[in-house]
Amino acid sequence: MHRYISETAKYGDLTRGPRIVNAATKKEMKKILKEVQTARFARQWIRENKTGRKKYDALMKKDLAHPIEKVGTDSAPACPG
Image: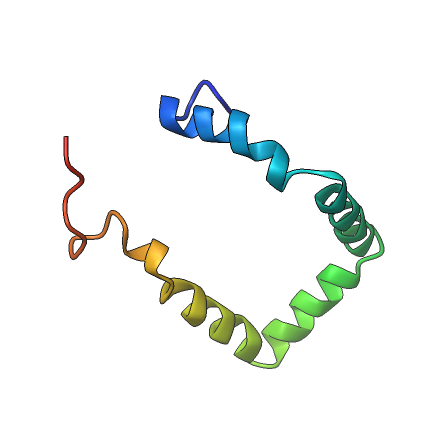
């Protein structure tokens, strides 16, 4: 990954990444892997699609409304430099 991201992103990953990807994160990732392996995730996704994607659409709408999603859009101010 580091070959394809900016130096700033690399610095952030190297200096802040361990605070994000830690024992607690790895524990949650193992839980998620189990959900995938047991098909729990697939069953939820299939059910979500069969019932009109209400939860998915609500989550996506909320995500797209987050201020971080404004960065890089035409309405966002240009980055200095």
